[in-house]
Image (cartoon, rainbow, N blue to C red; front, side):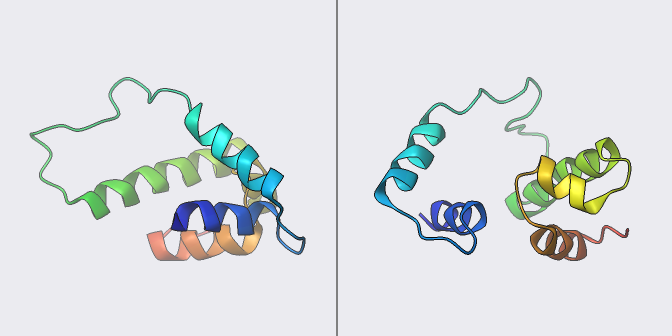
Length: 97
């Protein structure tokens, strides 16, 4: 539920959110693509869930920044978020510009 609210806030920053927006978001959530091969639970990985999620998020952010040729604004657009959120996540994950 918190993820849905966070996504609505990000996608509709500065505007009202209606029932249609929520339905559209929920419809998209049920048709998410299957995870890539090799991404999933491995019994030999002793890292905590938090560490695994941080590593995955770091991988996504660095990939977007690289694809955007170092442009944080463009990377934020690719990730469908705003620059401020991307900078916060980068700081939390120890990613330097």
